[in-house]
Length: 106
Image 1 (tube, one colour):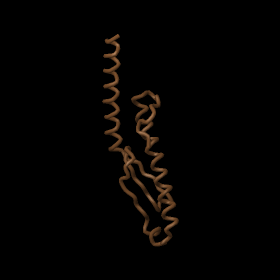
Image 2: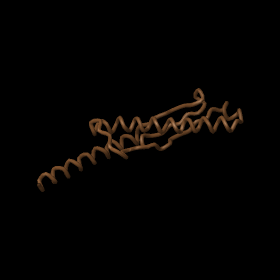
Image 3: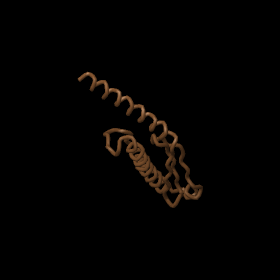
């Protein structure tokens, strides 16, 4: 029985190591979304950290706060979804498609 526990522990350590590798790779990958026909662009890495926000000069010149806020909210929501999809795809490679609750959820 102890041998089995040792094997399980070793396997858990291997999975943990692979997950850390995936996390490091996700930190290097980026996702970009745009809203308003490209007037607002948001880029984030695979850890859901925002890397950049670009607002087109024409949108700023419109001086319409409500439109700008709506486009920013839409872009932020979309970037979260895209990052989550990328994370699930990458994690699926090491879990064989098994969904583990709380793993890299955004």
